Image 1 (cartoon, helix red, strand yellow):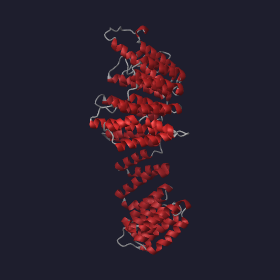
Image 2: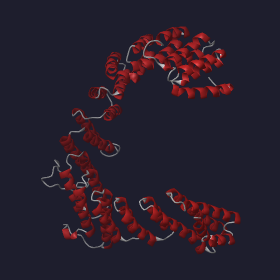
Image 3: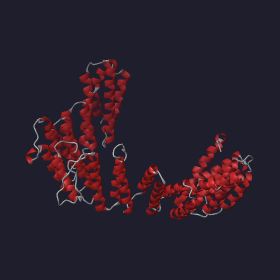
Image 4: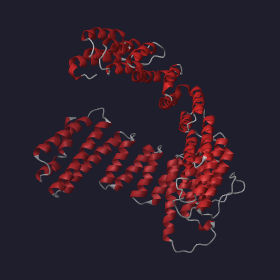
Length: 598
């Protein structure tokens, strides 16, 4: 092993001496390079060789090459460039070759090697490596893709690229990636051929002889793809590629014909056809195709395009009757309505009609009800408009009775309109339907009564205490705080003693009471201690913080002599998995008591 390492290191001595001679590196740096290389060589000489050792060695040499080039630029040294720089380049390439020979199954080495060869201008080596890679990794579509893209983009060799893509398709007949590569290549070639032959007059009709060769080839690839890949999104992606190229109308019609026949039950197909109408891309369906709408012909005014788009969506929702299809329809109309500089009334009318229809079909999502409400609120001009807004709110809560957002919007509207009786009535309905999710409504109701009927706030809090457990837990701390502000600390203490033992228990209640006790002009130790005692009683098994908070209180405001007893109780009470964490935190507090802030 030592002889092999020594020999390999000696092979690099000459260019290292040159580096020192022309003052790219000093003697100390050269010794460091020799030592590093020897260390790596010993690792590569072991019986069991590691991929990571090869990768680290390669990276070291590449970093050295980068530093070398930086030094040349900095010191304006150009001598012996070929001898030194390419000596390191060849060293890296030899390391890659060894790694590839030993770890043929690891695609990383092929990709990294080809990337390096490209950087140093060894393009012929890349082409040979591609062949080797495909012999080993031909079962991976990505490798055929890499090979084809290299030939196309770096070597500008269309025939070789086409061969790689087609061979890949023959081996991987379900690969969307390779079909897309081959399809794109042929359309690009058709465009290039078209640019070269520009100036030839076009005839009104298009015959098969006039279709560019590249488009014909793309059609063949498409038919292969359509037969093997049953994925509507993929077929649509090929159709969308056609829009970026010239002379593809016949190809697009072929794809659309297959889409409408094969995927008439897919929302994506209808979405695509409607969007094409919006772009003014016409299509003439055959009579036996399931497009139950007449598509536009040469109608490119904005109004016509929007109308035709809307017509396709109308046909779609009649056929599919799904929430997804209605959502796609309304999303498109919302996009159209973002620009109201042109045809504002027409656009608004289509959107409102679609919202009404979707609601009637029971397929309207929550977000669209909210948008509908927002739109009508912005448009309202009179009492009739007010009625429409409230009517849509009722539509929403009737259709989606568990929607917190819709109930919130509705009750907020009633509050702002001063309809007190309806506020109470609708809140009762919402609270019953939403249960624990009704917390935002309870908070809204409290704010409303605090502002308008403060004498009834106590009653509202008591009602909340008897409500859903989630509501009760959340409202207890707010109730105690309200009592302190309106009736004083004694009233709050009395109510806290009741609430603290009533289920469901609430840690936030104890925290809030402790906080309120600490802001009193004079701290009453016994009363202030009680929330900490009860918190440890209810949560002391699973929560270390309640013990820490109790200890901090006694250290800063209570009786420090109690700390040892609290610590003992905590260690005894806490779950075994939490004990170590508690002891560690306690030790930090004891070590630095002056840094503790309560």
